[in-house]
Image 1 (cartoon, rainbow, N blue to C red):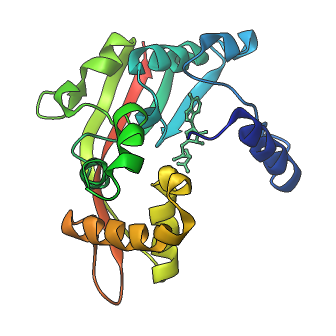
Image 2 (image 1 turned 90 degrees about the vertical axis):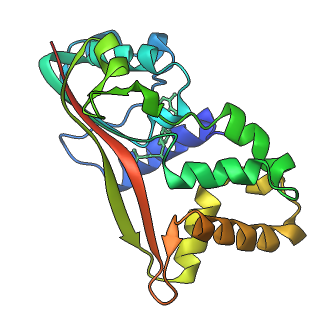
Length: 212
Ligand SMILES: C[S@@+](CC[C@H](N)C(=O)[O-])C[C@H]1O[C@@H](n2cnc3c(N)ncnc32)[C@H](O)[C@@H]1O
C-alpha cells in the first residue's frame, strides 16, 4: 500500500539526475527506523522540513526523536500534518464504512492513516505534548485553513486517486464509480466545493519547534 522502498530509490535517482544542484543531496532513510539514519547526520542540520509525512507514522514520538537527533542545538523543525479533524481524513473514515467501498478502504484507513491526534494539542491548540515529549521547545503551533483550486476536473481526479492508494485493489471496471462516490463524499464533507472552480479547503496542523 505504501510506496515501496524500491520506488523511493527510483525517485531519488530521478531527482539526482533531473534536479541536481551542488548544494543538494538526496538520501533515503526511514524515520521509523533509527538504524537507517547515518551517523554523520546526527546534530548536523539547522532545519528539518517535514510536510505531510507524519500521518503515515504510528509512533510519532520515536520518529520525532529521530528528527530531533539530526538537528543542531537551536535548530528548528517545520511540520505540517493532517489531524483527526482534517476533512479529507474524515471523508476517508466514511469511505471505510461505505457499503460498496468499505471492504477496500477499511484496512487503509484503520492501519495506515494515522493523523495527528487533536487531543495532543494543548493550550487551545497552541502547544503539543508529542513535540515536547520528543525534546522540542514549541515556538508556534496552530491548526490553519488552507485552500487550493484545481485547474480542471482531471486534476481533481488525480488528487482523489492520490489520496486513495487502495484504488488499485478495486476492480478496474468499478474504479470510475468509486471515484464518483469519493468525489460526492468529498463534497458532502466540504473537502471540495464549487462547480466551475473546484476548490479544496481543509484544516492542517502547522508546528514550528526548536531543539533545546
Ligand atoms: C504525501 S507525501 C509528501 C511529500 C512532500 N513532503 C510534500 O509535501 O510534497 C508523503 C511522504 O512521506 C514519506 N514517508 C512516508 N513514510 C516515511 C518514513 N517512514 N520515513 C521517511 N519518509 C516517509 C513518503 O516517502 C512521501 O514522500
